Image 1 (cartoon, rainbow, N blue to C red):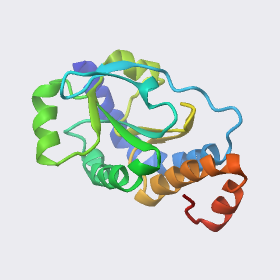
Image 2: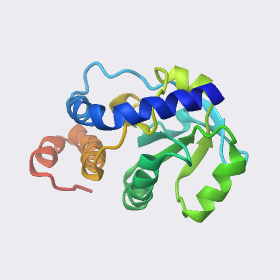
Image 3: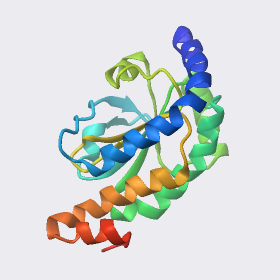
Image 4: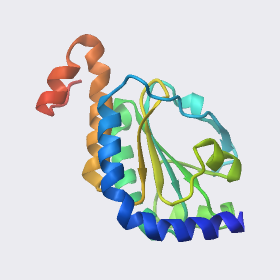
Length: 193
């Protein structure tokens, strides 16, 4: 995993600046086009309490799946946003899942979670999960999943808080489209119960 960390650091530096605008455009297209979405690979990982967590447990929810590390500068910028999103949208069928890619595992992750009062579930990942998601080579890498467990958007590097929030709201409001209200919500940007 040490080799992976070095590769992630090197790739992160280049992608942070160059990839943001391109990924923003790609994810905006993906979040509004439900046809052709790929299923997110399922996994089973342990959380901070030692409980096994499966991505399949979150079917029916919009999920923000964030690959991060305690040493990652852009990750530290995003994490407070994710804490806010978890609080704001959890009652609407939304969840954040963090997958730490720290080589030291829980030894460094648990103190970080406590210090930063992270309110969402965090798991410790490995090379296997990184490869199943296309070879996570840069941190942060974040996938936004729809209620059916399909990848609706992907972000590599730091993107704006509003980009994430717009995607989350579109997907949450998309649930209303089954009741023929989603188009109105999407066009007007309003919330519906």
